[in-house]
Length: 567
Image 1 (cartoon, rainbow, N blue to C red):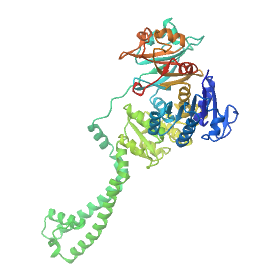
Image 2: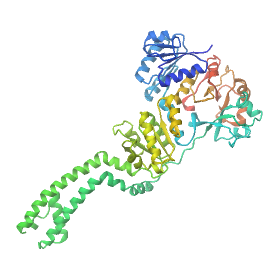
Image 3: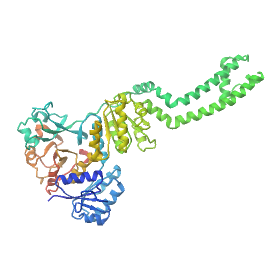
Image 4: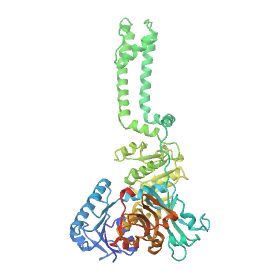
C-alpha cells in the first residue's frame, strides 16, 4: 500500500512538494489557507492549517507522513503539536528556519525530521558560483558533493567510453544512468560493458575541493597598506582636522621663535603644544613678552581649544563608531579572485559560510548596518561593505572587475535583477548568480537575461522534502527526466531483504545504484563494492528512484537510517 502523505502549507515550496509527490505516484493530500486555481477537494483541503477540523478533513488519523511546509516557524510548531495529538505515530517532515530549535525537536520527538529551505538551497548557489552546473548535492564522507547531469553529445569527452572506465574514479561518483534508448540500470550497464552514446544522460557527484586557508599576517598587512586610498574616503575629515591642528601648532611655534624671546625651537614647540592642548607648559616664556604676543597666545588658546575639541570628537567617532569598521573592511577587500555576495539574507549568510569554509575570499555588500548577520560575517574575517549593491559605485568599491563571481541574494527579486544587470554592465564577463523566489519565473528570468544561473530556493529544496516524505533521512536527491531519485543509507539487519546478498545482485533486481558500504571498520568502493556480500551491521549507501523508496521504507523487515556521525 502506498503511503498517505499530507502536505500542509501550499506556498511556493509546499505546492512544489505537493506536485512532485503526486508526480511520483504517491497518495497525497494538500492543505492550504485559501483555494488554489486548478485544485479542488479532496486533493486540497482549504482551512486554517493548525486546526483539528482541517487536519481531520485531510485524513490525519490515517496518514503515515505529514509535510509541514509553511514559512512561519511558529505556525509550523502549532501544526506539529496538533497533528501529534490527533495521530501520535505520524511521521513529520517539518520546515524550520530556526536550526537550533529544529535540532532540539529532532532529538526530543520520535519520527520528526526538520529541514531548512535555506540549508538545502545554499550549497547549490555556492556550487553555481564556483562554476559547477549543479542540480543538487549529496552528503558523503562528511562533505557536501555537488551533483551535476552530464548529457552525452557528439563533443562530450566521455562519448564512446565504457561506464566501467568511470566507475573506479574516486574523484567522482556515478549516481544514476539514463540511456537514450530503453531502460537499463547503472549496475547492469557496468557489468555488460555498456558504452556511452549520444543522448545518454548520467548523474555524477563531484568530490569537493577545499582551497588552502588563510594568508599570512604579512600579506594581510601588505593588503592594508596597498589599500590606503580607502583611508582617504573613510577618514578624510579626521585627517583634515589633524592637519589644521598641526598648522596651528607650527604657526604658534614659529611666532614665538621669531619674536626674539630667547627660546629655542624645541622650547617654543613644547610651549605651543601645551598651550593649545591644555596640557600646560612654561608660562614664563610669555610673561615678559610684548602685549601683541600675549594677545596672540590668548587667540591661539581659544582657537586651539576649539580645534582640539572638534578633532577629539571626530577621532572618537571614527574609532568607536562604524567608520573605522568601514575603513577596516574596505582595506581588506581582496584585489582579485574573490566572490561578491550582495545581501545578508538567510540564504546569503549560508552562502558566505559555505564559500569561506571552502577557502575562498568573500566580500559582502549589505544595506542594513543593523542586519543580525553582519557581526557574524565580520567574525569570520570577511569584509562587509555597507551600501546598496544596485549602485555602480558600491559594486566598483568591491573590485568587481577582478572578482570571480557575483551572487545577488537579497530578499527582493526586483533588486536582485537590478544588481545582476548592473554587475553585467560593469563587468560583462563576470558570472552572475541570481536569487529569484518564484520558481515558475526563475527559469524565464534566466532565459530572458542570459545570466549564468537564476535559482529559486523553493525549486531546489522541494525535491528533498518530497524525497524525505517518501522515506528515510535523505543524503541527497535530484530530478532527471521528471524522475526523482534519492540518496540514503540503509542498515543491514538479519531480516533485511538485502541481507546475505551480493550488492550487484540486489542492485540490479531492486533498481538502485550502490555508492559504498561501511563494513567492519572499512569502506568498500568500486568493483570491490559490487562483489561484497551484505551482512548484519553493514551500512549500505545507495541511490534509487523515489517512487520505489516507500517499498523499502514501509517494509517491516528493513530499516532505513542515517545517523548524524555518518553523514
